[in-house]
Image (cartoon, rainbow, N blue to C red; front, top):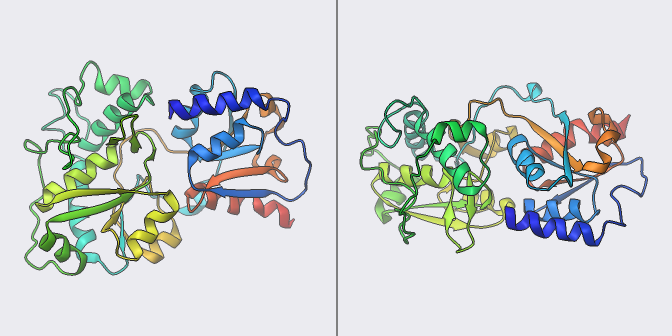
Length: 330
């Protein structure tokens, strides 16, 4: 992420004369992009007015922008969508055997403070993994620093083709899975001995690729845990965010794990796991803008007529469509 922030800020300086939002329009322009890097570069170069992001990612970009970007403090209303905590894994519709096994794994990682969580800590497995990945990815916050302390679970980790560097589950509690009646994709996974997951690695600390091309992330650690619980190897396929669910639906991969939150259309089209929860903080979704334009925005309605970017098929796309584009119809 830091590399892309640096590029974005260089572009911002180059095109600082352009200024965001100079062209006035009464109709909001929602532009969908494949990656968050595209969105942040567009914001930096004055090609858009705002970017819709989840709160953690938004704050990370702002913190690393050297004052170029600002949080608006204007959040989307999530109450209209019901309460769905955490991120979810997605399997092809009808693959209940697989998703039930995944849910048994999720139940363990959401609540077992033992194994790789140091003595004296009460954090769940997944909270521990998220905190460590925040430190590793440079997206740490005070909570992550407090949880991790001086521990470095990745010290000495040597990247390998089977992703053992992500997580050693030898000492971790695992669910007692009954796989004797596995069918569909789950049976195929067990027969071939490989769990294939798809991810878009542009969302630290959940998933990202470092400068050496190595995949990291709390969701990738969880994927390794899933594979080990099933007794199979892990294979990670990286792709654009918008392609992940398509890969699941067409059977190219077994699971999609890419920072997915719950959406009704996802629930209708896929089998979604229970949420795995890595932060105690209440999640929020917001918009970031160039710091020099922050005072223009007091409420969501102020974004009417603006050029807004969001990642295609993301929760933020849905929030902008539901809560900002609606003003165009009034």
